[in-house]
Amino acid sequence: MTGRIALEGLEFHAFHGVYPHERESGNWFEVDISVETDLAKAAQTDDLSQAVNYETLFRIVKDEMEKPSHLLESIAGKIIDTIFQQLPSVTEVSLKISKVNPPIGGKCKRASVEVSKSRK
Image (cartoon, one colour):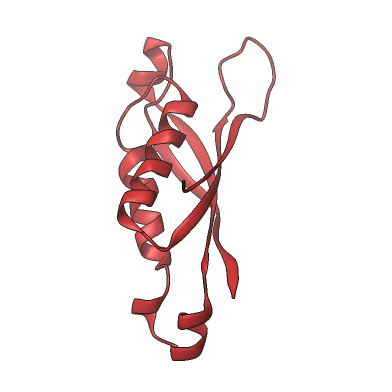
């Protein structure tokens, strides 16, 4: 039995961006992430060690959000690579990272990058 585990609406104040003022004062970012995995053992045993732990997913995202990067694409790639390294039961990751009020010279609620990757 496969399924998806998701964390939605994660919020971080971080120092990502191309412009110096973004890297100095920071900005707010929102992250939605879901992973596909086999849920059968967790469903059968009711044992956390047989499941993808939400806290582990959060820690992976948080750790990467704390490292300044220029591009959202770069952050997304690093998060996905770390998930595949640390969580061998995960077969696919879908991730959306949004920068709130991006500095584009006009009104914009958020700029987002959405990526998905399957384990090969």
